[in-house]
Structures are given as structure tokens and as C-alpha cells.
Image 1 (cartoon, rainbow, N blue to C red):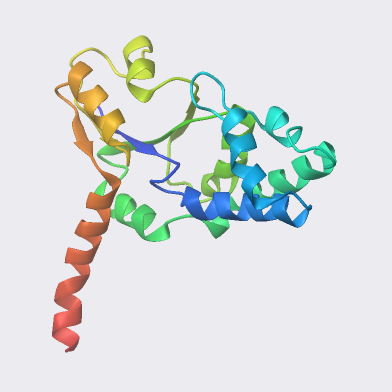
Image 2 (image 1 turned 90 degrees about the horizontal axis):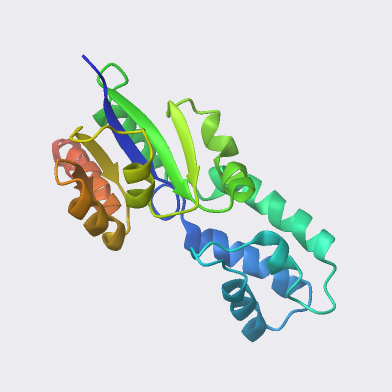
Length: 198
């Protein structure tokens, strides 16, 4: 029997991108860029799919050496899987979806090089059977690719309500899970043992 595919989002589901972004912005601030100039440049570096393009972003700050900034940003992204990974969610996914029955696939939208840096540490944990970096919405990608066949049941875990709603419109057979649901399930699992200890 074929394994059920479980697509897991990276940013904001497994990696705390708000903490990561704070760290990235701190690097730029420490190079002398005024606070109010940092985010607008980041936003204006995004392409039509909402993906920040690193080479454009690092050249957005006059007086800052773009090569030096790029190296520091790269180093921060490479530590993302250590510093910003939600290990509790990852552990829950490992228990809930054992490899005998499920195929866990990390699917992320972004600039390939940057997403690969973010996933480098996660790869060493051997939780996922595949890693997909895409430049469109996840629904659009699955509709156009052979990753799932028409009518196949699969699971998507994603923090984005917009993404889940889009997926429901195209793949009504899919189970769509908000990443916060993982936290609720984890909390419920922990409650009995805490009650017993009390």
C-alpha cells in the first residue's frame, strides 16, 4: 500500500521566521542602517511571488558593503535550523506520522539558495524523505506537478489560512492542518502526565 504524503511547510510552521527576521534586521542595523530603512528595502526586494531576492536586498543600503552583508545574512540563514527550529512541532510530526505509513515532505516557497541554507540543519535530522523548494503557491505547484495524482488523499500542514483555503478549492480530498493545531495536540498529550505528577 502506498504511503500517504504529508507536506509540511517550513517558514512559520517549522521555523520561527519572525525571530529569524529580527536577527537579520539586527545585522543590518549593526552596519549603521537606520531602523526605519531596513524593512522597506526588504519588502521592495520581493519578486512578483512575494519572495525576497537576496542579491537585490543586500544592494539596497547605500554605504553598506553588499558582499559583507550577504556573507553575514548567509551565516544567519545557515543557523536557522538550529536557532529558529520549532523542535516540539517536529517531534510531534515524527510521532504522529511514522515512516511506515507516511511520507513526510518539506515543501517551502522561496529563493532556492536561501531555502536550502535554512534547511541544511534540518536535513541532518533525517525526518523528511524529500525537500521541495518552489517559487509559486503550493496549490499551484501540486496542481501542475506529478507529486500527487488527481484524487489522491494527502495531508498539508501549513500556517497560512490563504494557502489552506486555496488547497481546499482544488484538492477537496486533502486534509489541511493549521500548524497551531500541532501545538494544541502536543499540549493535550502532555496534560495527562502533568496531572499524574501533580
